[in-house]
Image (cartoon, rainbow, N blue to C red; front, side, top):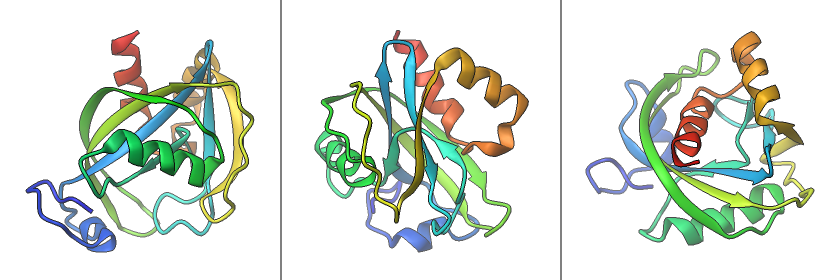
Amino acid sequence: MLHGSGQRMAKLAAHQAPGHLHEAFSVLLLDGDRTLLQKRAASKYHFPGLWTNACCSHPTSTDVVAEAEARLMFEVGVEASLEVVGSFTYRATDPASGLVEHEHDTVLVGRTAAAGDPNPDEVSELRWVSLAELDAELASHPEAFTPWLTGVLDCVRARR
């Protein structure tokens, strides 16, 4: 995985406190005014069981679009053409594991109506939700969502 300095670092080492800035990507899939959410598998080592955008990971090369498209197929079984719409940096600590996300997150968007076929090692559930419903859920139950989801949504909305 690429560290903020451009050097390679093991994924778990990057997430151990105090948390090292590293590159990440997040994919948001849209179908009209709906977006596909995944519930992270209970076996994930940080932020398990939380709802988040369609998929996310860490790039290992400079071709983030190709890597994100491949990761989308691997995690949720959906093929979509993606486009970079922005980026943001955030820091969040998982209260259960103590692991730290300190990421420069590149946000990509794709359009599809595909149902998906989730990889059970990555995803426990998929669901489509309107952006208005998602905003209401985030406001009333933020603890049910990953800490980076609002940044992803902000990047996409800034582009719309």
